[in-house]
Length: 138
Image (cartoon, rainbow, N blue to C red; front, side, top):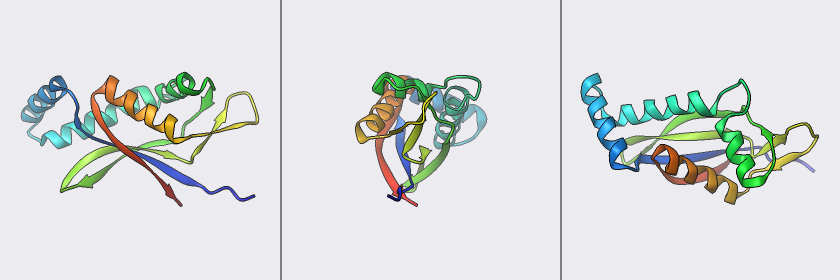
């Protein structure tokens, strides 16, 4: 059986809280850049500091554990942007739709429910509106 390799793109929108919008607007003025740029930079900084840690578990792995009860290794995440109606928004790319379960020879398939859970948790905890996700075959 041949495994289909894909990537999963979780797309986010603008700030989902008034607080995040106000802070982003103030920083944009101070830095003399657009609010769009500040939101994307802040999103990437958030990923780099809490999601993509290589020294132990990262937040992404913790969310997978909370949802599935499985401890996984996931270092195959990246940040990018996408354009919608002329505006750039942040997205997270998961390269592959299987994750290795720690200390086993098993793998965990990322089902739609788990992916939605991750997006909703980012929305709730980091105040970036979760828009949707898409599986893209490679």
